Length: 405
Image: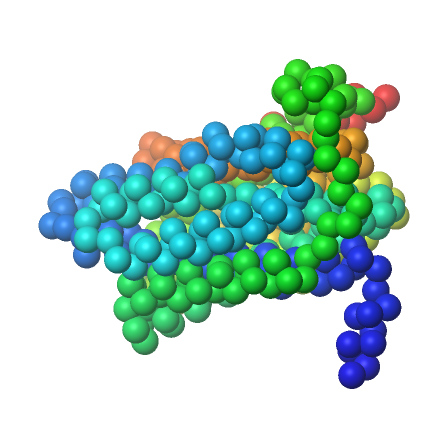
């Protein structure tokens, strides 16, 4: 009863934050729980050679992000004219149906087609961010967006563990069906409890076009600089995705439960990010978002370099945890900078454009990691990632910090 009374005293934006935190947590859970066995599911859909399996698995993984990157600006335009709540309802309902249908496919092309459609229905998280960005007070936006990111990260962290357990207890197909049900619950939850009372649709004709949106920005260089920053952050974080389990196996000399340890090592950065993201968001509100992001770049460089030279799994685990802390200073701070430098009437499109760059980073990162590890060795991936972060830092200083002077 006391909790209900407490919730009733909250402002609308705080209620939205609680509701959307739970929703993005479940969304992160739903998305990540199917990824660990996606290639294994592909393998059950045909009699493939090793090279065919690698090709089809990569295509099935990448197509969703590629289509999301292409379609996001269109959804962003609609969110500014029709509202962000209807966009999260569209995304959650559409993805609930599509992912549920993945349990029924009989060949890899049907799965590929549904992953393609899943990309079309993307945009829940970006529109949830837009709702918080446009309703939370500007001076509290860093903490609010950091809290939302912690929810997404927490769900993404627990997803692989839940997915593995469900697939072991039931089957791959049943796990897709359960994931669809989870996303349908998100749809119902969002429909009933998310409010958008003060939404003002964009009616100016000049803002209907991308050129008009750009003209409405005080500092286009800063905003597009943040898009590039987002792309490189995602590429950096995902560059090690293809090799992390192989690196773990090498450090363990192929002894012990490599699969379990790899899962733990993969989850450690997310745990760190979930724990500290809200705190860094609040710190950014106090000392300046640019300062926190600058600290994040420096920390990431300092942590990625020694990761290339670890000699045991404990050293790798500690450094991966520290990488998670540096991650907490990045994406939430980028979103906060976008919020503070974007007029409310075009926030939906700016966040959707940012999602496009983020999705491209999700595609490019693993390609970089696979290429570098094939050309050199696993350690080189971490060194190249550190170089990528350093380049990102320089671009950030040019496009964002210097643009404000």
